Structure formats: structure tokens, C-alpha cells
Picture 1 (cartoon, rainbow, N blue to C red):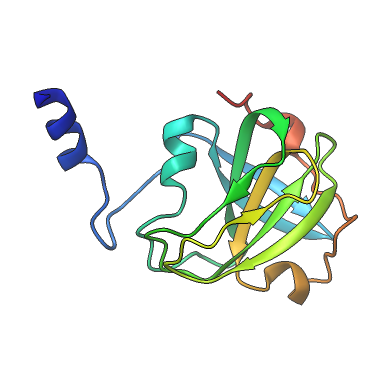
Picture 2 (cartoon, helix red, strand yellow; picture 1 turned 180 degrees about the vertical axis):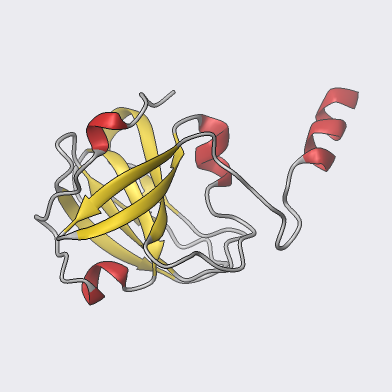
Length: 145
């Protein structure tokens, strides 16, 4: 019990708390470079981009799942409006969902996927990257745990 309380109190859940991912990948989409923090563990995927107040230009978070499935995302404690692209094993965008800050609305992949890439809201639309486009650089991603 003490471990749990200590663990909860030490987690960066405070609004604006600094968070870092252990891995950062350089990805590409439609001629645009993307710097993506990687969330490949259950703990990292659960934390995601929670408590951030901003996301730099052309930066995002790549969620790597341990198996292909119809994964879903939500925005609990996430203060930045985001768009999420669900990607199959080859990095092809299956579908894109726009997500509103600090909600628990569920946004799911239209078919089984291995990855999800969160970017600032409307990033994919503004850059002309629709479903069917490919995200490059995923071969460097760690395996999901």
C-alpha cells in the first residue's frame, strides 16, 4: 500500500508537469518531418500526452501496441486538442479522429492497427495527409509491451 501511495504521488499528474518519453523517433508523412515521443509500454500509453499545455510544431506521440487490434484513445487529463491517426502494421493511416481536450469520448481504429500517432488538432488535414497515406520511420519503433 505504501508503494502505491508513493508511486501515485510521484507521478507527473499535476497540470503542466514535465513528462518525457525514453525514446524519440523521427518519422515522416507527406514530405513533413515529425518528432515523435514513443509510448511503447502500458504505463507510457496510459499517460500519453496527459497534463501537457502545449505540443511543439510537428511534434507528436507514437503509441506502439503489443498486438494488432481495434485500439481506442481518449483525452482524460489532456489539455491540448489533438488528432489521432490509427496506423496498420505497414504504417498506412486507417482513419483519423479529432479529439477534444479533457474528455472521455472514445475514438477507435476503424480496423485492427498496431500504432496510433497523436499530433496537434487538424495537423493531418492541414498537411494534406488523409487516410491511406503512409507514415515513414516506423521500422525504428520499439516493440510494444
